[in-house]
Image 1: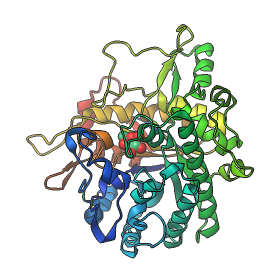
Image 2: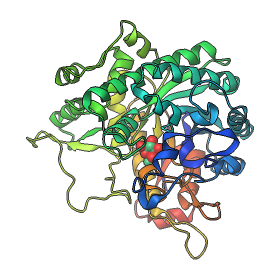
Image 3: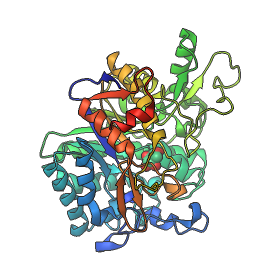
Length: 466
Ligand code: FCB
Protein backbone atom coordinates (compact mmCIF):
# COMPACT_ATOMS: atom_id res chain seq x y z
CA UNK A 1 0.00 0.00 0.00
CA UNK A 2 1.08 3.60 -0.63
CA UNK A 3 1.46 6.06 2.18
CA UNK A 4 1.55 9.86 2.21
CA UNK A 5 2.46 11.54 5.50
CA UNK A 6 0.53 14.12 7.47
CA UNK A 7 2.36 16.83 9.44
CA UNK A 8 3.91 15.72 12.71
CA UNK A 9 1.51 16.00 15.62
CA UNK A 10 -1.58 15.94 13.39
CA UNK A 11 -4.54 15.07 15.61
CA UNK A 12 -6.78 12.12 14.71
CA UNK A 13 -10.16 11.79 16.33
CA UNK A 14 -13.79 10.81 16.03
CA UNK A 15 -16.91 12.88 16.66
CA UNK A 16 -20.44 12.44 18.00
CA UNK A 17 -23.16 14.61 19.54
CA UNK A 18 -25.24 14.22 22.68
CA UNK A 19 -28.75 13.72 21.31
CA UNK A 20 -27.51 11.37 18.61
CA UNK A 21 -25.89 8.88 20.98
CA UNK A 22 -26.69 9.37 24.66
CA UNK A 23 -30.24 8.12 25.10
CA UNK A 24 -31.33 8.39 28.75
CA UNK A 25 -33.66 11.14 27.62
CA UNK A 26 -35.48 11.34 30.94
CA UNK A 27 -32.90 10.02 33.32
CA UNK A 28 -31.37 11.64 36.39
CA UNK A 29 -33.54 14.73 36.11
CA UNK A 30 -32.65 15.67 32.54
CA UNK A 31 -34.92 18.38 31.10
CA UNK A 32 -36.56 18.16 27.69
CA UNK A 33 -34.85 19.37 24.58
CA UNK A 34 -36.52 20.56 21.39
CA UNK A 35 -35.43 17.27 19.83
CA UNK A 36 -37.21 15.23 22.53
CA UNK A 37 -40.37 17.02 21.47
CA UNK A 38 -39.80 17.13 17.71
CA UNK A 39 -39.37 13.35 17.38
CA UNK A 40 -42.84 12.97 18.91
CA UNK A 41 -44.50 14.93 16.11
CA UNK A 42 -46.18 12.50 13.74
CA UNK A 43 -44.24 12.28 10.50
CA UNK A 44 -41.39 14.51 11.64
CA UNK A 45 -38.76 11.77 11.60
CA UNK A 46 -38.30 8.83 9.28
CA UNK A 47 -40.37 5.85 10.48
CA UNK A 48 -41.27 7.79 13.62
CA UNK A 49 -37.89 6.94 15.14
CA UNK A 50 -36.53 8.69 18.21
CA UNK A 51 -33.27 9.17 20.07
CA UNK A 52 -34.76 8.16 23.44
CA UNK A 53 -32.23 5.35 23.76
CA UNK A 54 -30.05 5.79 20.65
CA UNK A 55 -26.65 4.19 21.44
CA UNK A 56 -27.33 4.23 25.18
CA UNK A 57 -23.96 5.92 25.48
CA UNK A 58 -25.06 7.45 28.80
CA UNK A 59 -24.66 3.97 30.28
CA UNK A 60 -22.15 2.45 27.89
CA UNK A 61 -19.62 5.30 27.68
CA UNK A 62 -16.80 3.21 29.14
CA UNK A 63 -17.20 0.60 26.44
CA UNK A 64 -17.27 3.37 23.85
CA UNK A 65 -14.09 4.98 25.14
CA UNK A 66 -12.45 1.54 25.02
CA UNK A 67 -13.41 1.33 21.33
CA UNK A 68 -11.83 4.73 20.68
CA UNK A 69 -8.67 3.47 22.31
CA UNK A 70 -8.76 0.30 20.27
CA UNK A 71 -8.82 2.49 17.15
CA UNK A 72 -5.80 4.45 18.45
CA UNK A 73 -7.69 7.74 18.23
CA UNK A 74 -6.08 10.60 20.11
CA UNK A 75 -9.06 12.92 20.45
CA UNK A 76 -12.81 12.70 20.86
CA UNK A 77 -15.23 15.46 19.93
CA UNK A 78 -18.53 15.13 21.80
CA UNK A 79 -21.24 17.55 22.79
CA UNK A 80 -22.92 18.39 26.03
CA UNK A 81 -26.67 18.25 26.36
CA UNK A 82 -27.67 21.64 27.74
CA UNK A 83 -30.95 20.37 29.30
CA UNK A 84 -29.11 17.46 30.92
CA UNK A 85 -26.93 19.97 32.74
CA UNK A 86 -29.54 22.70 33.31
CA UNK A 87 -32.95 21.02 32.96
CA UNK A 88 -34.88 24.26 32.40
CA UNK A 89 -32.15 25.88 30.34
CA UNK A 90 -31.49 28.54 33.01
CA UNK A 91 -31.28 28.35 36.79
CA UNK A 92 -30.89 25.13 38.77
CA UNK A 93 -28.03 22.88 37.71
CA UNK A 94 -28.38 19.09 37.70
CA UNK A 95 -25.43 17.68 39.61
CA UNK A 96 -26.11 14.21 38.19
CA UNK A 97 -26.22 15.52 34.64
CA UNK A 98 -22.91 17.33 35.02
CA UNK A 99 -21.43 14.30 36.71
CA UNK A 100 -21.94 12.23 33.58
CA UNK A 101 -19.63 14.50 31.58
CA UNK A 102 -17.21 14.59 34.48
CA UNK A 103 -16.90 10.81 34.40
CA UNK A 104 -16.67 10.75 30.62
CA UNK A 105 -13.80 13.25 30.63
CA UNK A 106 -11.96 11.23 33.28
CA UNK A 107 -12.41 8.04 31.30
CA UNK A 108 -11.10 9.72 28.14
CA UNK A 109 -8.05 11.18 29.82
CA UNK A 110 -7.27 7.88 31.53
CA UNK A 111 -7.26 6.34 28.04
CA UNK A 112 -4.97 9.01 26.59
CA UNK A 113 -7.75 10.65 24.54
CA UNK A 114 -8.11 14.44 24.44
CA UNK A 115 -11.67 15.72 24.95
CA UNK A 116 -12.90 18.33 22.44
CA UNK A 117 -16.13 19.60 23.91
CA UNK A 118 -18.91 21.11 21.81
CA UNK A 119 -21.23 23.16 23.98
CA UNK A 120 -24.18 23.20 21.61
CA UNK A 121 -25.00 20.59 19.02
CA UNK A 122 -28.69 21.37 18.53
CA UNK A 123 -30.49 19.84 21.56
CA UNK A 124 -31.81 23.20 22.79
CA UNK A 125 -33.69 23.26 26.10
CA UNK A 126 -37.41 23.00 25.43
CA UNK A 127 -38.27 25.45 28.22
CA UNK A 128 -36.17 28.14 26.54
CA UNK A 129 -37.88 27.43 23.24
CA UNK A 130 -41.16 28.15 25.04
CA UNK A 131 -39.70 31.50 26.07
CA UNK A 132 -39.03 32.45 22.47
CA UNK A 133 -35.90 30.42 21.90
CA UNK A 134 -33.24 32.08 19.78
CA UNK A 135 -35.55 35.02 19.06
CA UNK A 136 -35.43 36.04 22.71
CA UNK A 137 -32.91 38.87 23.22
CA UNK A 138 -31.71 37.16 26.41
CA UNK A 139 -30.86 33.94 24.57
CA UNK A 140 -27.15 34.85 24.21
CA UNK A 141 -26.91 35.36 27.98
CA UNK A 142 -28.64 32.05 28.68
CA UNK A 143 -25.98 30.35 26.59
CA UNK A 144 -23.16 32.22 28.30
CA UNK A 145 -24.48 31.22 31.75
CA UNK A 146 -24.72 27.59 30.70
CA UNK A 147 -21.17 27.80 29.31
CA UNK A 148 -19.92 29.07 32.66
CA UNK A 149 -21.49 26.12 34.50
CA UNK A 150 -19.81 23.61 32.21
CA UNK A 151 -16.46 25.39 32.15
CA UNK A 152 -16.39 25.63 35.95
CA UNK A 153 -16.84 21.89 36.16
CA UNK A 154 -14.61 20.60 33.37
CA UNK A 155 -11.93 23.17 32.55
CA UNK A 156 -9.43 21.74 35.02
CA UNK A 157 -9.20 18.88 32.49
CA UNK A 158 -10.75 20.09 29.23
CA UNK A 159 -8.72 22.52 27.14
CA UNK A 160 -10.48 22.46 23.78
CA UNK A 161 -13.90 24.04 23.41
CA UNK A 162 -16.22 24.40 20.44
CA UNK A 163 -19.08 26.78 21.11
CA UNK A 164 -21.65 25.88 18.45
CA UNK A 165 -22.01 23.16 15.84
CA UNK A 166 -23.18 24.06 12.33
CA UNK A 167 -25.32 27.11 13.06
CA UNK A 168 -26.34 27.06 9.38
CA UNK A 169 -28.06 23.73 9.79
CA UNK A 170 -30.06 24.23 12.96
CA UNK A 171 -31.06 27.72 11.82
CA UNK A 172 -32.18 26.75 8.32
CA UNK A 173 -33.39 23.19 8.89
CA UNK A 174 -34.97 23.97 12.26
CA UNK A 175 -36.32 27.49 11.77
CA UNK A 176 -36.97 27.79 8.03
CA UNK A 177 -37.83 24.46 6.42
CA UNK A 178 -38.89 22.63 9.61
CA UNK A 179 -37.06 19.41 8.82
CA UNK A 180 -35.26 19.64 12.17
CA UNK A 181 -36.31 20.72 15.66
CA UNK A 182 -37.95 22.94 16.66
CA UNK A 183 -39.76 22.65 13.33
CA UNK A 184 -40.48 26.31 12.55
CA UNK A 185 -41.06 28.24 9.33
CA UNK A 186 -39.73 31.73 9.97
CA UNK A 187 -39.53 34.65 7.58
CA UNK A 188 -36.24 36.30 6.70
CA UNK A 189 -36.40 39.09 9.25
CA UNK A 190 -36.86 36.60 12.06
CA UNK A 191 -34.18 34.29 10.74
CA UNK A 192 -31.59 37.06 10.56
CA UNK A 193 -32.46 38.01 14.13
CA UNK A 194 -32.06 34.39 15.22
CA UNK A 195 -28.65 34.24 13.54
CA UNK A 196 -27.57 37.46 15.20
CA UNK A 197 -28.49 36.05 18.61
CA UNK A 198 -26.69 32.81 17.82
CA UNK A 199 -23.55 34.78 16.92
CA UNK A 200 -23.84 36.85 20.08
CA UNK A 201 -24.28 33.63 22.05
CA UNK A 202 -21.07 32.34 20.48
CA UNK A 203 -19.18 35.52 21.38
CA UNK A 204 -20.45 35.59 24.95
CA UNK A 205 -19.66 31.92 25.32
CA UNK A 206 -16.06 32.54 24.19
CA UNK A 207 -15.83 35.31 26.80
CA UNK A 208 -17.25 33.01 29.47
CA UNK A 209 -14.76 30.27 28.62
CA UNK A 210 -11.79 32.63 28.76
CA UNK A 211 -12.99 34.25 31.99
CA UNK A 212 -13.58 31.00 33.87
CA UNK A 213 -11.16 28.43 32.51
CA UNK A 214 -8.67 26.82 34.87
CA UNK A 215 -6.33 25.45 32.20
CA UNK A 216 -5.33 27.59 29.22
CA UNK A 217 -8.23 27.20 26.79
CA UNK A 218 -8.28 26.73 23.02
CA UNK A 219 -11.60 27.94 21.65
CA UNK A 220 -13.29 27.56 18.28
CA UNK A 221 -16.60 27.09 16.49
CA UNK A 222 -17.67 24.42 13.97
CA UNK A 223 -19.75 25.77 11.09
CA UNK A 224 -20.29 23.98 7.80
CA UNK A 225 -17.14 24.35 5.74
CA UNK A 226 -17.78 22.57 2.47
CA UNK A 227 -18.90 24.88 -0.21
CA UNK A 228 -17.74 25.30 -3.72
CA UNK A 229 -14.99 23.60 -5.64
CA UNK A 230 -13.66 24.63 -9.05
CA UNK A 231 -14.89 22.31 -11.79
CA UNK A 232 -11.45 22.50 -13.42
CA UNK A 233 -8.01 23.78 -12.46
CA UNK A 234 -8.39 26.81 -14.72
CA UNK A 235 -7.65 30.06 -12.86
CA UNK A 236 -11.11 31.36 -13.82
CA UNK A 237 -12.89 28.40 -12.26
CA UNK A 238 -10.72 28.61 -9.15
CA UNK A 239 -11.43 32.30 -8.74
CA UNK A 240 -15.14 31.82 -9.31
CA UNK A 241 -15.30 28.97 -6.80
CA UNK A 242 -13.52 31.12 -4.23
CA UNK A 243 -16.02 33.93 -4.80
CA UNK A 244 -19.03 31.62 -4.70
CA UNK A 245 -17.81 29.85 -1.60
CA UNK A 246 -18.20 33.04 0.40
CA UNK A 247 -21.14 34.61 -1.41
CA UNK A 248 -24.36 35.24 0.53
CA UNK A 249 -27.22 36.19 -1.74
CA UNK A 250 -30.53 37.28 -0.28
CA UNK A 251 -31.06 34.06 1.72
CA UNK A 252 -27.78 33.82 3.61
CA UNK A 253 -28.90 31.12 6.05
CA UNK A 254 -26.70 28.45 4.47
CA UNK A 255 -23.76 30.65 3.67
CA UNK A 256 -20.36 30.44 5.30
CA UNK A 257 -19.50 34.13 5.33
CA UNK A 258 -22.71 35.37 6.97
CA UNK A 259 -21.74 33.41 10.08
CA UNK A 260 -17.97 33.69 9.92
CA UNK A 261 -17.21 37.21 8.66
CA UNK A 262 -18.77 38.74 11.82
CA UNK A 263 -16.49 36.51 13.90
CA UNK A 264 -13.28 37.28 12.02
CA UNK A 265 -13.97 40.72 10.51
CA UNK A 266 -16.62 42.05 12.91
CA UNK A 267 -19.05 42.73 10.09
CA UNK A 268 -21.68 41.00 8.01
CA UNK A 269 -20.61 40.50 4.38
CA UNK A 270 -21.53 43.51 2.24
CA UNK A 271 -23.25 41.54 -0.56
CA UNK A 272 -25.61 39.94 1.96
CA UNK A 273 -26.30 43.18 3.80
CA UNK A 274 -27.29 44.78 0.52
CA UNK A 275 -29.43 41.85 -0.56
CA UNK A 276 -31.19 41.66 2.84
CA UNK A 277 -31.92 45.35 3.13
CA UNK A 278 -34.98 46.01 5.25
CA UNK A 279 -34.66 42.73 7.16
CA UNK A 280 -31.34 43.27 8.94
CA UNK A 281 -31.36 42.47 12.67
CA UNK A 282 -31.06 45.07 15.39
CA UNK A 283 -27.32 45.40 16.01
CA UNK A 284 -26.28 46.91 19.35
CA UNK A 285 -23.21 49.19 19.59
CA UNK A 286 -20.99 46.47 21.16
CA UNK A 287 -22.44 43.48 19.38
CA UNK A 288 -19.78 43.13 16.72
CA UNK A 289 -17.00 43.33 19.30
CA UNK A 290 -18.66 40.61 21.35
CA UNK A 291 -19.13 38.40 18.29
CA UNK A 292 -15.60 39.04 17.06
CA UNK A 293 -13.76 37.46 19.99
CA UNK A 294 -10.40 36.12 18.81
CA UNK A 295 -10.49 32.35 18.22
CA UNK A 296 -7.71 29.79 18.51
CA UNK A 297 -9.08 27.54 15.81
CA UNK A 298 -11.82 27.27 13.26
CA UNK A 299 -13.59 23.92 12.95
CA UNK A 300 -15.08 23.03 9.62
CA UNK A 301 -17.51 20.21 8.89
CA UNK A 302 -17.00 19.07 5.32
CA UNK A 303 -18.91 16.30 3.57
CA UNK A 304 -18.86 17.50 -0.01
CA UNK A 305 -18.92 20.53 -2.26
CA UNK A 306 -20.52 21.79 -5.44
CA UNK A 307 -18.45 22.30 -8.55
CA UNK A 308 -18.42 25.79 -10.01
CA UNK A 309 -17.61 26.59 -13.61
CA UNK A 310 -17.46 29.80 -15.57
CA UNK A 311 -19.16 28.05 -18.47
CA UNK A 312 -22.43 27.80 -16.62
CA UNK A 313 -24.18 31.09 -17.15
CA UNK A 314 -27.06 30.53 -14.71
CA UNK A 315 -25.84 29.86 -11.20
CA UNK A 316 -22.22 29.04 -11.90
CA UNK A 317 -22.81 25.60 -10.43
CA UNK A 318 -22.85 22.55 -12.59
CA UNK A 319 -25.25 19.81 -11.76
CA UNK A 320 -23.60 16.53 -11.06
CA UNK A 321 -23.57 14.30 -14.10
CA UNK A 322 -25.98 11.36 -14.26
CA UNK A 323 -24.72 8.40 -12.32
CA UNK A 324 -22.19 10.40 -10.30
CA UNK A 325 -21.13 8.49 -7.11
CA UNK A 326 -23.39 9.27 -4.16
CA UNK A 327 -23.58 7.99 -0.59
CA UNK A 328 -26.61 6.22 0.89
CA UNK A 329 -27.81 9.69 1.94
CA UNK A 330 -27.62 10.81 -1.73
CA UNK A 331 -24.73 13.12 -0.94
CA UNK A 332 -22.33 13.38 -3.90
CA UNK A 333 -18.86 12.06 -3.14
CA UNK A 334 -16.52 15.04 -3.67
CA UNK A 335 -13.07 14.27 -2.21
CA UNK A 336 -11.53 17.52 -3.44
CA UNK A 337 -13.85 19.41 -1.07
CA UNK A 338 -11.34 18.42 1.59
CA UNK A 339 -8.66 20.26 -0.34
CA UNK A 340 -10.50 23.36 -1.54
CA UNK A 341 -12.62 23.84 1.60
CA UNK A 342 -9.67 24.19 4.01
CA UNK A 343 -7.63 26.09 1.41
CA UNK A 344 -10.23 28.76 0.70
CA UNK A 345 -11.10 28.99 4.40
CA UNK A 346 -7.46 29.42 5.41
CA UNK A 347 -6.92 32.08 2.75
CA UNK A 348 -9.89 34.09 3.94
CA UNK A 349 -9.77 33.75 7.73
CA UNK A 350 -6.21 32.71 8.47
CA UNK A 351 -7.17 30.79 11.58
CA UNK A 352 -5.79 27.27 12.27
CA UNK A 353 -8.29 24.68 11.04
CA UNK A 354 -9.63 21.40 12.35
CA UNK A 355 -11.83 19.22 10.22
CA UNK A 356 -14.42 18.76 12.93
CA UNK A 357 -16.59 16.42 10.83
CA UNK A 358 -16.29 14.36 7.66
CA UNK A 359 -17.78 11.00 6.79
CA UNK A 360 -20.58 9.21 4.99
CA UNK A 361 -23.77 7.30 5.55
CA UNK A 362 -23.70 3.81 4.05
CA UNK A 363 -25.87 0.70 4.00
CA UNK A 364 -23.82 -1.37 6.41
CA UNK A 365 -24.88 -4.62 8.03
CA UNK A 366 -23.17 -7.48 9.82
CA UNK A 367 -22.28 -10.16 7.30
CA UNK A 368 -22.46 -13.92 7.83
CA UNK A 369 -18.97 -14.05 9.29
CA UNK A 370 -19.78 -11.40 11.90
CA UNK A 371 -17.79 -8.62 10.22
CA UNK A 372 -18.89 -5.36 8.62
CA UNK A 373 -17.24 -4.81 5.22
CA UNK A 374 -17.79 -1.12 4.62
CA UNK A 375 -15.54 -0.81 1.58
CA UNK A 376 -17.24 2.38 0.49
CA UNK A 377 -16.21 4.05 3.73
CA UNK A 378 -12.63 2.87 3.31
CA UNK A 379 -12.52 4.21 -0.22
CA UNK A 380 -14.19 7.48 0.84
CA UNK A 381 -11.73 7.98 3.68
CA UNK A 382 -8.74 7.24 1.47
CA UNK A 383 -9.87 9.60 -1.25
CA UNK A 384 -10.87 12.47 1.04
CA UNK A 385 -7.80 12.20 3.23
CA UNK A 386 -5.52 12.24 0.20
CA UNK A 387 -6.98 15.65 -0.65
CA UNK A 388 -6.57 16.89 2.90
CA UNK A 389 -2.98 15.68 2.88
CA UNK A 390 -2.39 17.71 -0.26
CA UNK A 391 -3.75 20.83 1.47
CA UNK A 392 -1.42 20.23 4.42
CA UNK A 393 1.51 19.78 2.06
CA UNK A 394 0.69 23.19 0.58
CA UNK A 395 0.92 24.67 4.08
CA UNK A 396 -2.77 25.13 4.73
CA UNK A 397 -2.75 25.10 8.54
CA UNK A 398 -4.91 22.05 9.34
CA UNK A 399 -4.27 20.69 12.82
CA UNK A 400 -6.49 17.63 12.97
CA UNK A 401 -9.32 15.53 11.59
CA UNK A 402 -12.41 14.13 13.32
CA UNK A 403 -14.28 11.33 11.61
CA UNK A 404 -18.04 11.55 11.75
CA UNK A 405 -18.80 9.35 13.44
CA UNK A 406 -17.37 7.14 16.12
CA UNK A 407 -20.44 4.92 15.83
CA UNK A 408 -23.75 4.56 14.04
CA UNK A 409 -26.28 6.85 15.69
CA UNK A 410 -29.56 8.74 15.42
CA UNK A 411 -29.22 10.79 12.25
CA UNK A 412 -31.74 13.56 13.01
CA UNK A 413 -34.65 13.70 10.53
CA UNK A 414 -33.79 10.32 9.03
CA UNK A 415 -33.49 8.48 12.32
CA UNK A 416 -31.48 5.26 12.20
CA UNK A 417 -31.73 4.95 8.43
CA UNK A 418 -28.21 6.31 7.92
CA UNK A 419 -25.21 4.57 9.44
CA UNK A 420 -22.29 6.99 9.71
CA UNK A 421 -20.14 5.04 12.19
CA UNK A 422 -16.73 3.47 12.15
CA UNK A 423 -18.36 1.20 14.69
CA UNK A 424 -21.54 -0.68 13.86
CA UNK A 425 -24.28 -0.50 16.49
CA UNK A 426 -27.06 -3.05 16.80
CA UNK A 427 -29.74 -0.80 18.28
CA UNK A 428 -31.69 -3.76 19.73
CA UNK A 429 -28.86 -5.35 21.67
CA UNK A 430 -26.49 -2.35 21.82
CA UNK A 431 -23.74 -4.65 20.61
CA UNK A 432 -20.90 -2.74 18.97
CA UNK A 433 -18.79 -4.17 16.13
CA UNK A 434 -15.73 -2.46 14.70
CA UNK A 435 -16.28 -2.08 10.98
CA UNK A 436 -13.39 -2.80 8.61
CA UNK A 437 -13.07 0.97 8.14
CA UNK A 438 -12.26 1.32 11.84
CA UNK A 439 -9.28 -0.97 11.31
CA UNK A 440 -8.24 1.09 8.30
CA UNK A 441 -8.57 4.30 10.32
CA UNK A 442 -6.40 2.81 13.05
CA UNK A 443 -3.71 2.04 10.46
CA UNK A 444 -3.89 5.60 9.18
CA UNK A 445 -3.54 6.99 12.69
CA UNK A 446 -0.64 4.72 13.53
CA UNK A 447 1.15 5.67 10.31
CA UNK A 448 0.09 9.34 10.56
CA UNK A 449 -0.37 9.02 6.81
CA UNK A 450 -3.10 8.38 4.31
CA UNK A 451 -2.85 4.83 2.99
CA UNK A 452 -4.08 3.88 -0.44
CA UNK A 453 -3.73 0.85 -2.71
CA UNK A 454 -0.48 0.96 -4.62
CA UNK A 455 -0.46 0.57 -8.40
CA UNK A 456 -1.96 -2.76 -9.32
CA UNK A 457 -3.04 -3.56 -5.76
CA UNK A 458 -6.75 -4.07 -5.23
CA UNK A 459 -8.60 -2.39 -2.39
CA UNK A 460 -9.64 -5.84 -1.19
CA UNK A 461 -6.02 -6.94 -0.92
CA UNK A 462 -5.25 -3.80 1.01
CA UNK A 463 -8.12 -4.45 3.39
CA UNK A 464 -6.97 -8.02 3.89
CA UNK A 465 -3.68 -6.64 5.22
CA UNK A 466 -5.40 -4.55 7.91
C1 FCB B 1 -23.77 17.14 10.30
C2 FCB B 1 -24.13 17.17 11.78
C3 FCB B 1 -23.94 15.86 12.48
C4 FCB B 1 -24.35 14.69 11.61
C5 FCB B 1 -23.68 14.77 10.25
C6 FCB B 1 -23.99 13.61 9.34
O1 FCB B 1 -24.50 18.10 9.63
O2 FCB B 1 -23.36 18.14 12.45
O3 FCB B 1 -24.65 15.88 13.68
O4 FCB B 1 -25.72 14.64 11.50
O5 FCB B 1 -24.05 15.97 9.62
